[in-house]
Amino acid sequence: MSFFSNILSKLGLGKSEAPAAKPAAQPVAAPAAAPIAAAAPAPAAISAVDVVAKLEALAAASAQKLNWKTSIVDLLKLLGLDSSLTARKELAKDVGLAGDFGGTAEQNIALHKAVLQKLAENGGNIPKELL
Image 1 (cartoon, rainbow, N blue to C red):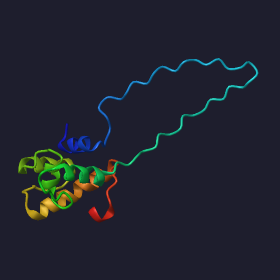
Image 2: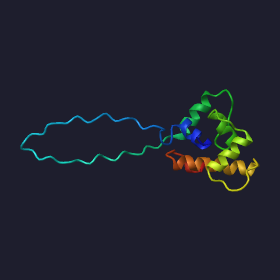
Image 3: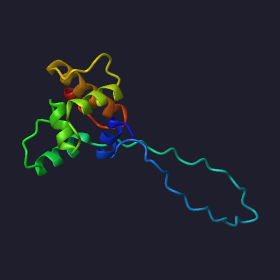
Image 4: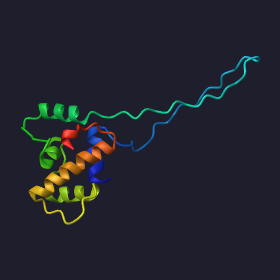
């Protein structure tokens, strides 16, 4: 499991590991005079997860004052994930940041933005001002 998939899991995003089993359909007897029409199943709507609301709820419950809106370290801490340089290096690879991640301020800002963008791509509702 990638580091980024841990973030998705914490926020309730992404695909589940094992699909839920569907109950077998019971045959229904149609009236003899009625024609049988095959109805296509309605497409499932993709619901966006309100990531900001989830993170704000976590922040309100946290004893620490964490600036998750701008800090990748604080965002990871808020989610209860490892925020070490090693973890952020792995996360940088997961979200496709090129180059050697050294944890500079500029790299951390870029990583934070990349994580929020990837969350949006995976069904997270992220406001434009945070992207």
